[in-house]
Amino acid sequence: MPAERLLPSPEAEAILELARDVAQRELAPRAAAHEADGSFPRDIFTTLGELGFLGMPYPEEQGGGGQPYEIYLQALEEIGSAWASVGVGTSVHVMCCYPLATRGTAEQQERWLGDMLGGRLLGGYCLSEAQAGSDAAAMTTRAVRDGDGYRLNGTKAWVTHGGEADFYIVFARTSEDRSRGVSCFLVSADAAGLSALHPESKMGLKGSTTASMVFEDTFVAADHMIGAEGDGLPIALEALDSGRLGIAAVATGLAQAALDQAVTYAGERETFGKPIIEHQGLGFLLADMAAAVESSRATVLEAARRRDRGLPFGRQASIAKLVATDSAMKVTTDAVQVLGGYGYTTDFPAERYMREAKVMQIFEGTNQIQRMVIARKLAAAGR
Image (cartoon, rainbow, N blue to C red; front, side, top):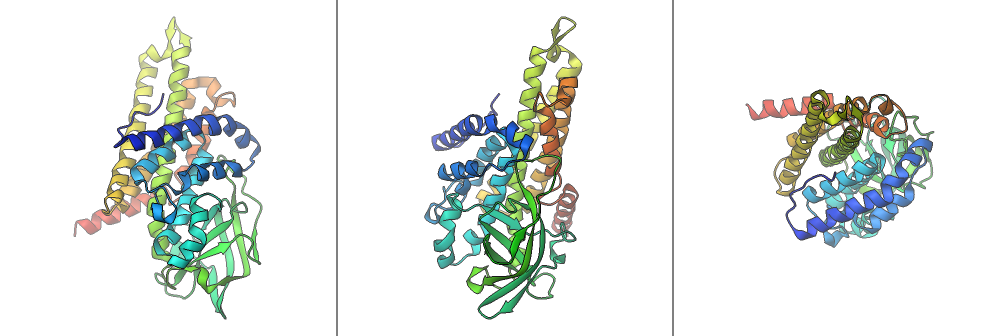
């Protein structure tokens, strides 16, 4: 059953209808096979780029769709409900475009941004390291000045599209200053000295390649630095606020898919002479699942609307990410319970939804980190 939405315009309704159609016609039929064999669906991102979904929240003058985050996130939810790996990949790519779109020079934007927003170039985000995940300022990857550029050395972990992307947004240390010692670079995938390690073997999201990226004296020209030297950490954290909303939207879509699967099954399966949805125990469980999905969507849209109005939204983004991903984990687990033994088999997608939900509580900042962010902002507001 499609999510019930209150959209602000006929244009928004058309966009969401297109997103739903593409999700169900192009994505859903392929999801199970790719998730089973771990193959990366590069062509899907080309299609989404051609249709405008990879550049939706960026200005038209930059080659984007000029849509508010409120609409983009609902389109992303539709994509995520059909295939979470593609939803996550879309969110990560859109986040990869953020540094260039907001801090890049006119020359840099003219050179790269159009192809990025149009999906002709797919991005990877290189921030985390093996010992510097939640604490990004502890990164050790270095960029040392060398003539008219920089030499990068280090390893970035947990890179979505690692080894598959055409470019990487890379954060590297250019000085020892903890908060102003990191800079942002755009690095082409074919740069000498850049390589991908073997992809991680994951519990879920197998259709989304995740790998560590190794930089060995990788030369990056100075005109590939985005923003000024030392601006990297603020850029990364700004991008993450928006990225967390993307993951929250995908998690909401995943939870909606699990709810739909459970409701359909509960309406068809009979025990004691009636569909199990009519038994109070199952009915109440489904009601709680529906409440969790609706609550997640509401928190995502509240944060998005604040962002669209230019208001501070960092706390709301953390709340949305926390609520939506925790809810997705619970809803998908309950969906497996509703299906009983069948939920534990690969004959139904419920078990895959449950495996996919888990990582959403971890990436773009663990939910423990989200609680820290929220608490700190509350403390600051109370002073």
